Amino acid sequence: MLTIHGRNLVGGQFRPALSEKRIDLVSPSSGRLIGSIPASEKRDIDAAVSAARAAVEGGTWSRQTAVERGRLLTALGALVSKHADKLAQIESLDTGKPLRQARQDIELTARYFEFYGGGADKFGGETLPYLNDFNIQLWREPLGVTGHIIPWNYPSQILARTLAPSLAMGNATVLKPAEDACLTPIHLSELAVEAGFPDGSINVVTGSGDVAGASLASHVGIDFLSFTGSPETGASVAAAAASNRIACALELGGKSPQIVFEDADLESAYPVLVQAIIQNAGQTCSAGSRILVQSSVYDLVVEELGRRFAELEAGPHDLDLDLGPLISHKQKTRVLGYLELADQSTMVAQGNIVSDAPPDGFYVRPTLLGPIDGDSRLAQEEIFGPVLICTPFSDESEAVRLANGTDYGLVAGVWTSDGSRQLRMAKALNCGQVFINCFGAGGGVELPFGGVGKSGHGREKGMIALHTYSRLKTVVQFHGH
Ligand code: NAD
Image 1 (tube, helix red, strand yellow):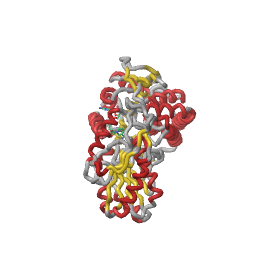
Image 2 (image 1 turned 90 degrees about the horizontal axis):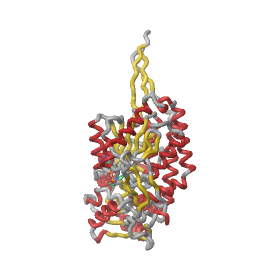
Image 3 (image 1 turned 180 degrees about the vertical axis):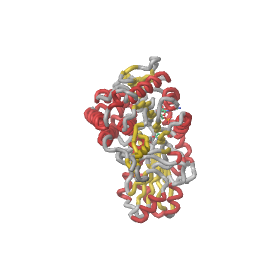
Image 4 (image 1 turned 120 degrees about the vertical axis):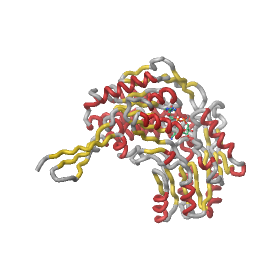
């Protein structure tokens, strides 16, 4: 079994936490120890923020042109592709996700670096019409030092999604990965040094959320905070950022509906409806975790989904089945707690855990429930596991009411062959992304992404992220008659 003892990257140096303390890592597939990471504290975060500050204020990084920054990002993307096999093995071991999914994640990680590598020298300011005799320029400047706190569900993809646009704009970065899964971030930090990123431009510091994470979120030396994780922690890091008067982007999950009308191409919808919840064992912020089905086809759709759920298999990451284990014992307990809320009469179908899955792994059977009342906790709260709930609706207005009827608003899917209805629904849905006759949980490097309400605010992905990671300065020049 692979055992990895990771180090922090601070100011171009790989080192343990200053206290030398460590946190053990376990494999979600077996519950067994697979390595350890530095248990960093406030002084490690202080050192990383200082190194980043030095990088943007006079360091080599501050002198790089947009073209040079783009080339570094592109070089890192190429290194990720070159080491894709090894990175995918590590991501799969560390998170428990099936190997083929980890391979897709690493491909997307490379794609983020490539995309923003290409974007770095193509994004600039503007001029504005104003009074005669004046020249108005809008400049796009880096923010300075950006802090990034990321979760365990897609460690490599989310690292790339948040660091790459920030680096493209010339910021220096400090990243705190999640303590439950951070081996790929550690490996990516090594590849960043190999690609030639100057000292201090990328700092990666591991540790617990309440110590290392809280120290970064409340640090007076950062100029912007990007956070992806739970709404509760999101609220606390946003409060810390506000007390330092800095902006933040929050991506806090969802309860994303897929709405199936009676005129939908159901055969095309079924595999997508299932995949959107079992991907990453349901631990995806944009998982399609609720299905709203028009009453006239409700029984038909639920019966077919039930048949497909009963065939699903969960097992160790290296068996590459439909889904792997959950990330931790804590998450497994949480998801099983939700299943206990379900009335037995609403249990439509459950998939299986393969017999050779290690008993100490964190497996949960994929489960289809319905009909579930739209106001119940199962329909309102993010379960973050392989649990799909079905709720019937009678007409378009009820579909909209149910779809918008949670505190979240990240993504929605609409399945209908009526073109006018597709657009009416897209307008009426209160969320950041709408998919029509398709659904994309994760992925979509080019597609701006972010939520409303409890799903957070701010946009990442796509060229819009270059706005997020830069500051606008208005320059007013009087040039005379
Ligand atoms: P979390 O929000 O506590 O953790 C996310 C990140 O924040 C991790 O890096 C963690 O170390 C850090 N963190 C934790 N406490 C912190 C603090 N006080 N200050 C600063 N950083 C802190 O999430 P979790 O406890 O791992 O999972 C709980 C629930 O969150 C899940 O069940 C799920 O519903 C949700 N979640 C959502 C996403 C998403 O992509 N939106 C990802 C992970 C978890």
